[in-house]
Image (cartoon, rainbow, N blue to C red):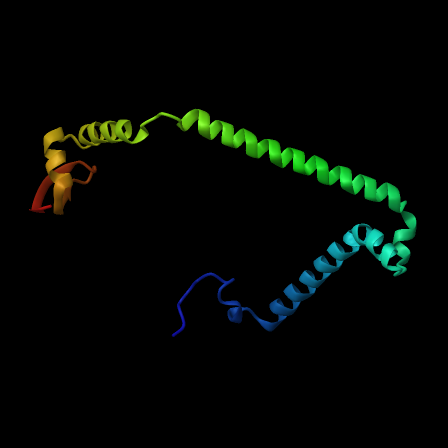
Length: 150
């Protein structure tokens, strides 16, 4: 059974053949561009394996390897410091706090005040399994019937 999904990415069969061919050509062009840009990264490896690609002759291989190692070390440093900073903030701001209690008390009072009902009525309604609520056109509660207390 086929799902009825309106997203075109999930229903590529709905695209015309011309559109599919154009998308395939554009994708191929972008992959070739990425491959061309990656040649300097591959050239030291091909040089070590004895494979000659003329593209790498424009680069100084030892200098390139040194820059690549430096770039990797800087990336590791940046990612590492961000992870350490995130862990520090998690420990600093969540240690020893009981967030759940303060949120529940605030939400309970705020909800009762927002809908213009008494706090004890709201508590009764929260314990009910079924609520029938009638709202006015402005969104205020007109009638509530609670049944099947849980």
